[in-house]
Length: 130
Image 1 (tube, rainbow, N blue to C red):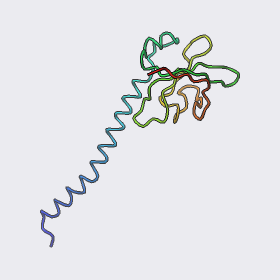
Image 2: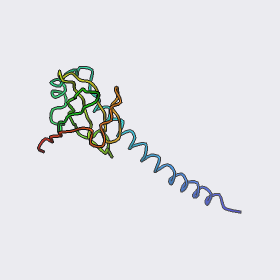
Image 3: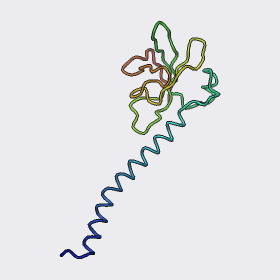
Image 4: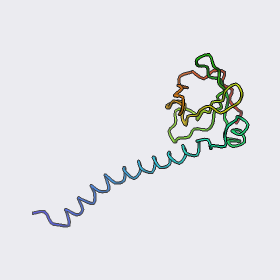
C-alpha cells in the first residue's frame, strides 16, 4: 500500500503542474483585457482632434483605407495586446468624424462596421518618428 504522504505529494505536484499554467494564462488574459479596454476610445471622442487630444503620444502613424468608394483616414496607435500582430487602428471619415476602431488591425476586424484592415488594406501609411 502507498503511504498517505506519497499520495499527498503526488496530488500537490499535479496541482502545481495544472494550476501554474492556468494562473499564467489567466494573468495574460487579464492583462490583455485591461490594455484593450484602455485602447477603446471614450464616448467623448467624436472627431480626429478629440482623438489626438486623448491619445497624444500614443499615435504611431496614419494611413488611408478605402471601401465602397469611401476613403477613411486611419490613425494608428500602439498595440493594445501583449502579442498583437498589428497596431490599434482608429477610422475617421472625410469630415474628421470618428467612425470605428480595432484593438489589433492584424487580427481583428473593426468593432462596428467589421472592416478588414489586415494584409495591406490600409494604404499610404506614414509612421511617426520615434
